[in-house]
Image 1 (tube, rainbow, N blue to C red):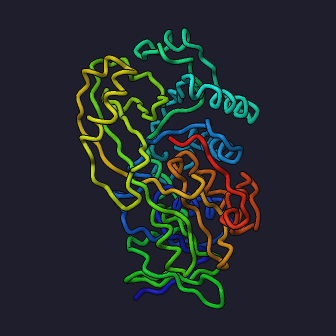
Image 2: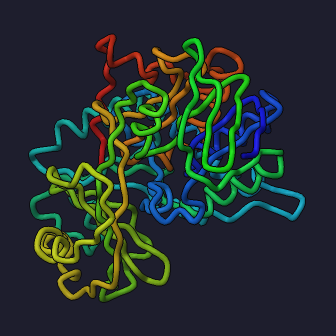
Length: 391
């Protein structure tokens, strides 16, 4: 077995783990980092299977702050991730916007949320029914009151984000170990090391649980509870009958489905259901689209009656009791930190969340973005931050 001692050992190589590693090293907060990732091709990671949406339209100040920082970071991602070989990856950030459609049932709550978002500095537009039809003529607006449009929002390529963070962190000296972490060693109430089949990595400052949907399992390795569970979600790729949708935003219907343009003239479609499995399930359900999504999609966008369902996949949300992330130290185990449970908005917040945790570990406080409200102790203290804007 190989033995190594580092400042920080990280478990999980989706967007969060490499983001933490990058910020620790690029900011000079520590000198050495090792990261364990069991799935280096990201065949099952939440990041790799996400729809890549990026938005500011949240219902809590901390999520808006994390998104604001992250969007600015993504705008300069290739420069931030530049290595000796050249610029970092192009994440294909398309600022088409986010559009929440309003009907009589959700209008009051979404407009009240828009008031709050504007007070928090979010740039948005309120579209009435006529403006909505003028801008997006394929949408059936007869039962709608209008929409809320996030001007600076859009979507990007999640795989290139992970690739950029990983490559840059490696250039800065991070060691990536492509093995499954099998144990977190604890001594005298402190997390001190991570073990896999071939490695034992001791950590001077911190062990970081960035394991996404597996964060609960990693917590149990360390003998503590981390309230994160997997939730299987479906994504469908369809070929629409026209190219009109290439300029469309990521659009969320009052019935719960969303759609957004994809490269090659495709459109991605998805919807969360109350009975989605709370387990590690990656089975793609073609009939779910045909029976439970397509009828609503065709009613809202009539030309989609003639779409062709091409392919799709299932991925995992990593959910917490209040649908918000956990960022910060574990209250029951010293030097054990958690950055997981983002409930579908991890890609949107990855750059800011990684920096916030890096600062918390090495500086003892949050300097760039105050994520203190997302620490795990909030559940025991009755301070849950319910996020209403979950898609």
